[in-house]
Amino acid sequence: MVVIIRNILLAIYAVICIALIVLATIQTKSSNGASGTITGSAANNFYEQNKGRTKDGMLKRYTIICGIIFVLLAVVISILFEM
Image (tube, rainbow, N blue to C red; front, top):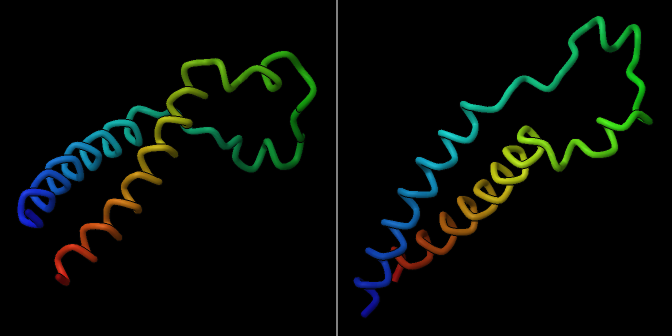
């Protein structure tokens, strides 16, 4: 029974790994660099308040979720392989 659960979790882990790689590579760079540090940015505009609803915001959210699932599955799989 443990072997079946292990194999299912490894398959899910592989899918999450691929999804995490794809999500991380299609994101845009979000830092402004040195010019953003010097000039600053207006954090009170409409885009800054609603950027979680944009495509970039959704990609960032999905990447964080996949990263959390990746870490949790890594811990669970390591525990199962110790049995």
